[in-house]
Structures are given as C-alpha cells and as structure tokens.
Picture 1 (tube, rainbow, N blue to C red):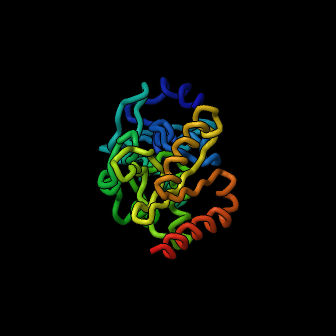
Picture 2 (tube, rainbow, N blue to C red):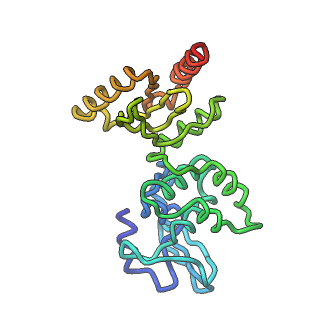
Length: 243
C-alpha cells in the first residue's frame, strides 16, 4: 500500500479510495492479481484522477464514504459492492466473509443494502451475497467451506465451540457438523509453530477421546482437494454406519 500512502495527500475532498483498494484497507483478503491496483473514485462530475497505476472511477455525489486510516474511502459495504466489478463470485464471498466476520465491520443485511438494482454487476453481487456467512476467519476457510458444499457435503457450521458430555470446553473448530461429531480444520502456516502444534495435538486428543472425527486440510489440499474430501466422505460414512 505504498502508493496509497503517497496518494493520500493528493486526493481532493471529492475523491476517495474505492473498490479493492478500500476493501484491502478494511483488511479483506484479496487475490494477488489485484493487490497492486489502486482505485480512486470521484464523487460528482469533477475530473477523475489520472495517474500511472491509478484506476479512476466516477460515483454519485452522495456516495457513502468514511474518513479512516488517514484517508477517505468507501464504507465497508460500499467497497464490497464495488469489488463485484473486479472480483469473481468466490473472491467476493471471501471479502464479504471478512467484512461480516470477526472484525464486525458490517452485516450481511448491510451488504445487501449496498446493492444497486439494475447495475451490470448486481448478478455477481447477489450470487456472492447468498454464500456470505458469519464465522470464516480467513480466505482459505471460505474457499474450503464453498468447496466442501460444492463436493456434495452438507453446509457446515462455522467456528464451533466443542464441549464434552460434562460441558467441558474442548476447543473451537473452523467448521463442524455437530450432529455427526465431525470437524474440519484448515491448518495455516501458523499451525507449524511449536506452541500451536502442541496445542493442536492436546486439543485433538480430547476430541478423539470424546468420539469426534477431525479432518485436517492445508493449502496444498486446495490445489488437489480429492484426498481431503475422501477423508471427509469416510468420516460421514463411519457415522452413518454407526447410526
């Protein structure tokens, strides 16, 4: 975001960071292909910003913006809507999941209210909106949630607190089907750290003792998910045989 910092003092009062630039400032995950783009919108009819590396846009004079991070930018809801012109449906879902998630920057209803009926990108936004959920804490968790459902599994609950029969807290899992006692965990790079690794093993031991099946996935499984989906299928099959 070095270029963003350089542009901040150059923005007029009617200009603001928008689209993926604003979404990135709000902390949303973005695909690598758009991270170097800088989007600046102009509210009203004044001249657009024309500089190398800047993509200029025109917005209505009463467009929703806010002053934060030392600059004017689109609101979280507005930036999500603007991203519909730049991102795929799944990428837009990941941005939506982040904005309605742990940071609590907006709600699903807030995203819905930002849609502009009749706009050329409203179909993309509506398709993404149907898939946005509260609970995913990373773009990869969103990817696996969508992929799991696409593979034919029931939609999981997100960030589920698991307790034993006595109500003792065992741990929180990324995704779960509590009625089947099946959990799905995405292990990012931080899981390789020694203390995280030890914590995961202690927690998983508690799950095993309490008859939970835990399927783990890594970034490598996103490229070739067949094996991890087969493990998940086996977990469901084991539960059905035991039913």
